[in-house]
Length: 224
Image (tube, rainbow, N blue to C red; front, side, top):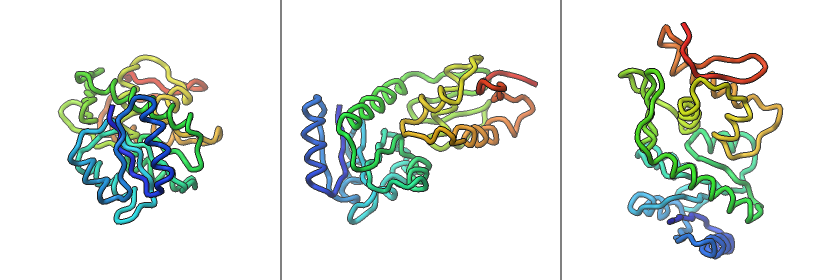
């Protein structure tokens, strides 16, 4: 497994490199955003660990350009920017996970394992339920013949729904399988993203697939 670390603090970059190499990963380090983006675009990596505050090109710009170019490599943002709106911006731009500094290395290792395992699950053939079709390699989705434009988080939730169709999924189930970041227990982030999905997957069609189950969560099934 090949991991790219884009981190301008050389002590932190060295710590990450040594630690992950001891776990058996091949690690390449870049200390600025422009060079990191060039590496990500020209070499095959299984994971990108990306700082936000970088010289030459900041991490959020790197992430945006990668996603716009259709690169769906898993990205873990590792940054001192720890405000809630920073985390939301990182995830909405396409990060798969967000870890703030200072951090425990054991937690970084666990998140790396989770992201790579999830990415490996997304290398199979297309799958579908009813007339929703998911392409796990390119992170694309369709309802019938119509493509659905999704953010990375929306894609993960829809794919999770389709893989678990006809099963009631609690908000905690959805959060645990579609996010890796800690969440305020009173947050409504799952409900917010479900509403985003409903507008894209259900509103244009007479038959609805995403339904609330009172007191339990949500289910993906056909209802008139």
